[in-house]
Length: 578
Image (cartoon, rainbow, N blue to C red; front, side, top):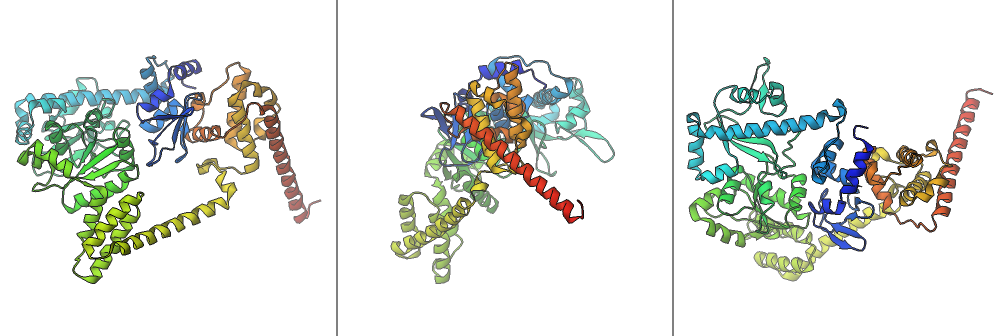
């Protein structure tokens, strides 16, 4: 193992999982657990639990679970060693020396972040050079103040093929490192040159303050107009948002979602320090999960063209699943927030925010814009499509209000509209009930792990194996009777592996906790472990339960062996053997 167990034990003892998780997720205590909206999938009702006594988390919705290390791995998209490094820095511990092969990814990650920081400083410093006058002129024409330029670390990539390569070489960075960081490109002839040339530069900074990538805008007619860093060891455009490192600190109570760097920067300069932008990609589920960690309200402020309308509708679909309040800005006499603020000022934009449609109003208005309500056939199509939007609302009050509004617009009685909505909801409930009935008729399927690679070949034995592991994690007194079992008697390779680990550590006098098994198990195995720990088990009846579990495992093992023997004998007989 690359990291000493003693260090991991110390790290686990210094890390309170409730404190860790609550720095990302709003938690509420109920009983002996804490609950919140899951950061790993979109949901409206909290199904994510954190257990302080077990130092583990588990989501009853998406079934992810584990300890502190797993939480950081999953949320930050890190490997095991990198996640330990994050927690070590948080706990004030010095990471121990590991073998070169095991620490290479962590060191490469740190080196890449250092390179990005130096590149960002170089791009920014270039603005003071005569050769950067085009970049300075661009920022001046966009009405950006020197303070804003400095605050966002904006810069300029000089013309020429290898200015950045040579500048970073002076800092000790090699061409291969710039290639890996996406700062350089190799052509078909093997020549390596700067990726960003004659562009104004926007450093992309993560929520921990690390420069993870860059966006660059051309200053002529070159294409592409905007060029972003490719995905690297430290950068994934689908899991990061521009300026979220600043917006997460806002006191405005909402986050404004824009389409680009300049809209976001213009809003911050105007006093709306809650603006963010996606990075050259449509809003993703990962973006939504990230936003839900920092706000309960999102205002979508996209361009009013067809592309912007389509992007807004997609964003609404993703954001509304989380239970966040979603509003959509109706831009008047301007194509984007930057232009609006320049024309009418920050106060007018603040008024526009307050007048913004909620997501239901926006969707209904978009439906209405598709039809001519003076024509009967189109009015009917409008009513059917609008009813489908209203039927998806959870609140009966909202359904009644919007049903009435739609009916009035189409010249229909409110009662008829509500009847159509009711019909659609009944149809949806019927479909859901059929799905649930199919699941109920397959209890063996319900007992299977979520991850198909861990599925059970022998469900009765695997359920007993779960019970053995659960008891071992509950109390050390159960290790003694469990010695009569052997790992090879387990039908599930996962439970056999965990049993072997637990028994080995117990014999050495260093019993494992559930959270400390993260060093040996995959995230999927840790999630399965977290799931079985949520099943109630009585310590008082534990001795008898352990005996029953062991008997069930060994009985199933014997039955499997008998069946295999019968098949072997039948096969021999069929082939003429004696």
